[in-house]
Amino acid sequence: MILTVCMSPCTDVTIELDSLNVGKTNIIKSKKLSFTGKALNVAIGVARLGGEAYTTGLMYNENGYMFENELDKEGVNFSFVWNKGRVRENYKFIDSRSMLTEVNDVGQEVGKEKLKDVLSIVHNISARSSVTVISGGLPRNVEPEYYGDLVRAVDPRSLRIVDATGQRMFSALKEGVDLVKPNIEELENTLGRHIVSTDDMLEGCYDLLDRGAKCVLLSLGKQGAIITNGTNSYHCKSINVAVNSTMGAGEGMVAAAALQMERGAPLEEILRAGVAAGTATVMTVDQVSFTKETYNDVLSMLKVTRI
Image (spheres, helix red, strand yellow):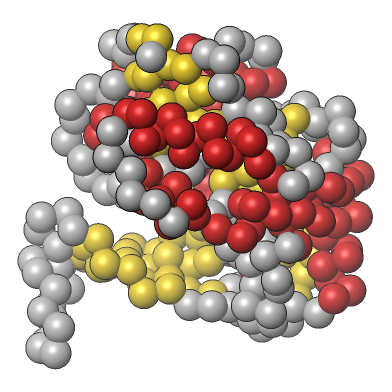
């Protein structure tokens, strides 16, 4: 079983426009609501690939039932710590060039007892999980060090995957992590350096390894991804596809990687599966995750090369 931990669920309001004109009236072409959150999307991706997925974390009384309904449809089991108020709302504006502009809410404050309850649930359920994925943001009153608390709460028999940036990532790395999955922009922002060449990318990954990661899966967008454990490094280039939206691509990559890690797959297969899922996600229309059919089609066309 793969457990995912979501501390910051959100309702994504995706609005399509011909163009986003600041300071002027804009006409909506289409509007879609998605009940999401990085770790929830990972759980859905795992379920769509046929894995057993379970998700936990924080949820909110006023509209949390809509998230439960969506997870039920996807075959994802769940158990949340409930809080007063509403799940935060994020607005995503997409223009005719597929340019994405995001306006994100910060969400409700959460009491210390609720945070302790989450740690208890993570400890208990991770004892039954082969892999535990911790990803996404935190409520506005919660310090980045809480990521370290979450990682420390995971049963030592469960592999730990973290998808976070900045101090949240650093806090998790101090506790030891089996895999982290930044993208190029996140790696640059986290390490405070400009990354251009493959050597730059590997040096950035090695920095994360030195800080406590056993493996780094670095997403390169259209260029695929790199994976390294410090001894062996590989690159998998993606295929050219029509990009409907980049939303959820990182979560798709983590979902597929988590399943491969659960199966004890080598680095090359973790990488290839991750790139296939990320690519399949950007090809999928009006869904927060990919379809298994598209994933399999893409996977069959991918090749991995040693760096």
